[in-house]
Length: 337
Ligand code: EPU
Image (cartoon, rainbow, N blue to C red; front, top):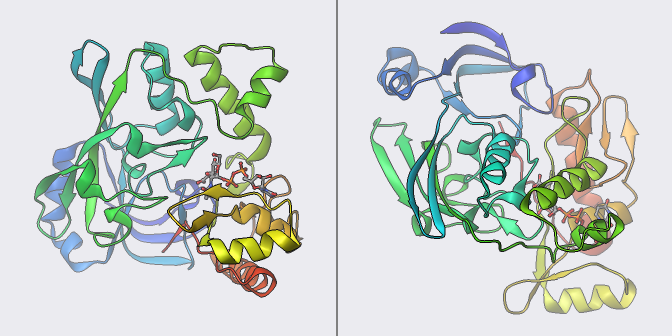
């Protein structure tokens, strides 16, 4: 166990929050032993995965940070068109996607290049380009922090929704996911309908893309729009896309005929928060250390030298101005610590 560890390289915003205690877990047994330890019981604790979706608000985390870094990818079952793969929580997500693509397994390719680790992926049901983690999720194993007991969660039990699961709601901070089983396929089914994938492929003269070509296209598309956390601190989309009543949407559409939107549940419409934030005048805004990314207004960025509080204040100002202009409340998808 280390003391007074600067978490700068453990959070993609790059904030210098200092953890009173810090432990890196490389083997599952270490985690089991830790949960029964005195320090774990006496200190408030935080399970940290890739740190790509957290915002540390303070300079100090007065407790124990447990960094999950367990590795391993194992094929559990391979039958006909199906492959079931078990992946340990500490595996890097984009590397896992590359691995599956290299093997010719379909099911996670549209989620290429999303920074983070496998164990965190189900927590917010990561999604991009018409695909969500839940589409290929079979089950996961998780340890209950209060007891150290291992439990299997089926897909249904995870209660997946848009950027949400039971691990972000009812069971928030109560379990640590230790491995995830994916059900992947060997026969080609590519999802190309979303947004700019088709435009990208036709620009590059690709008529029927291979799995690898689609993967690479998605990496390029993301690179063009989203800042690399290694260069500019950020946590991807900061807010969720709000889902609003059809009546409110119709009223807005009269005023803004070009408002982008996606159908959602009956009587509801999903509107891109990035568009709302841009219309409210924030795109490319910068003050001292933080700002709104110039190519995608949904991403709040930290240029260095700032504090988590700066992002908190900026997020509040954006929420207020979007609400004042459109009557829509936008909520963060990033976890505040
Ligand atoms: N838009 C603007 N201005 C902006 C940003 C977007 O007008 O500054 C408009 C775009 O023109 C487009 C629409 O909003 O019509 C949607 O934009 P985009 O395709 O970039 O997707 P998004 O809704 O902003 C979502 C996910 C991303 C994911 C992309 C691609 C959420 C909260 N975000 O963003 O996920 O990569 O779709 O599928 O659902 C993440 O969660 O960290 C993340 C990056």
